[in-house]
Image (cartoon, rainbow, N blue to C red; front, side):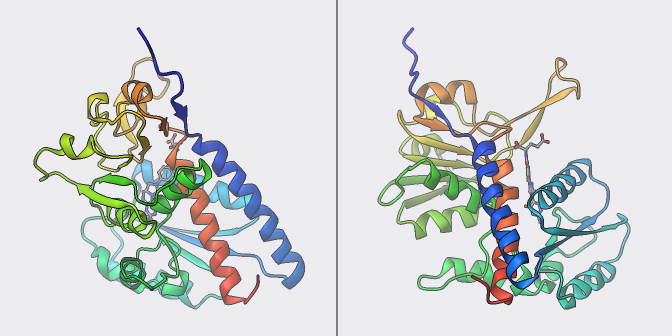
Length: 298
Ligand SMILES: Nc1nc(=O)c2c([nH]1)NC[C@@H]1CN(c3ccc(C(=O)N[C@@H](CCC(=O)O)C(=O)O)cc3)C=[N+]21
């Protein structure tokens, strides 16, 4: 059977490492010339295991590039007011250049109130409605672009995938990935379609795409037969599936059936090792951008 051996793995892990090295150099240049160390504050409410893992990874990543990290771990039954008090403290703390409230929040909290409270100058997640609004408008610039979609576009750039004039399909319309990913692709002059749970005949639309960004959170949902030969696939999904052979009892897979996709696409991001590490690298980059901006350092 002829197999397309030209399909390329898009190595997010190694690109993320490269970006962290660039950030490390910038952080030390900044420290040496103006004595400022960028700082990131992470607020984690509750004890979801996946969230705790992500927060731990973010902290490790900060350390690896010389960014200061502060962490607030609040119990699951905290009040919204307590979270808002932490945000207010970090908003006023000049050593904090970025504030991230780990999502999802416990269901008794109003996510919108909490995201609105983060000073937009410190909104390194890019989730403040004013940042999203600017992202959606032509001729406007947000202060920060959300990390996961930014990481997706960065991967396309670093692998020299041209976006201008291409057909791009985003699968999923979440506020934190699908929607901003579609806006970013449009800013890069792609022709963008968004496919979601109510789309009739999604396969037909996906099959027209030169670039696919999949962000639905359903293991192996996109099959090989849905993919146009030569398409580039960015898989944002991180789905645990049972795996008795893994020491943890599960393994992580994407939204795209990787084994099928790699035969048909020209390039695919793996899970793990694709978009995940890029998300964290972009968070560090946003924190550096924030610190440079307040201190007028370039
Ligand atoms: N306010 C907020 N900002 C976020 O950026 C945010 C969030 N909330 N909530 C949850 C999602 C998810 N997320 C990930 C980051 C890194 C990996 C990552 O590094 N993944 C590794 C493997 C992880 C593993 O092995 O468990 C990989 O894909 O290679 C995954 C997922 C950030 N998120």
